[in-house]
Amino acid sequence: MEINKKAYEAYVKEVTPVNKKWPNIVKAFLVGGIICTIGQFSTNMFMNGGLEKEAASAWTTLLLIAASVILTGFNIYPKIVKFGGAGALVPITGFANSVVAPAVEFKSEGQIFGIGCKIFTIAGPVILYGILSSWILGVIAYVLKAFGIL
Image 1 (cartoon, helix red, strand yellow):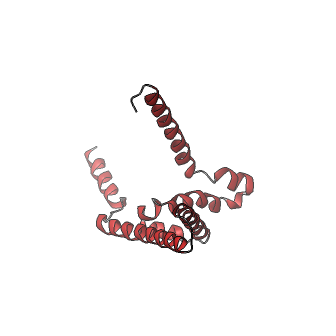
Image 2 (spheres, helix red, strand yellow; image 1 turned 45 degrees about the vertical axis):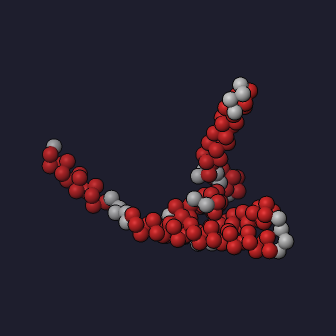
Image 3 (cartoon, helix red, strand yellow; image 1 turned 60 degrees about the vertical axis):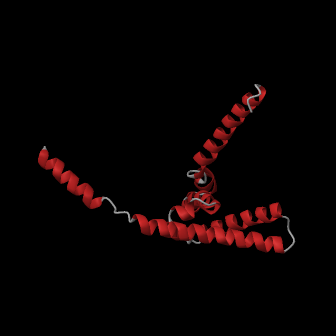
């Protein structure tokens, strides 16, 4: 039994990927920073073009989502994610990528059973639990306001 345990530990050590923490942190910071810089630059350009801040922010959001969808369709955004990790997954561009990637992957299965059924495979739980948690917090806030606590 002891020999098998040592062999298993050696096997696990051999196949477990070694993560380089600091280089990954730097890459995530750079990629996330670049995405945010593009977003801020876009917002500034829209505002310089005469839009109010809210409208400029909305157009920036649409621009970032569209860029993410297009880059995912051309298989470029997954390479950015592989390099930048959480720096590319956390912003809204990462969420757009998580919706589009399954659609691209399963398009060969058809419009209904491929794209239609699989498009929210990754993003579906995020949407579901986001809505559920906001509903629960809304009910709690309503009850607290009713009792004068909030």
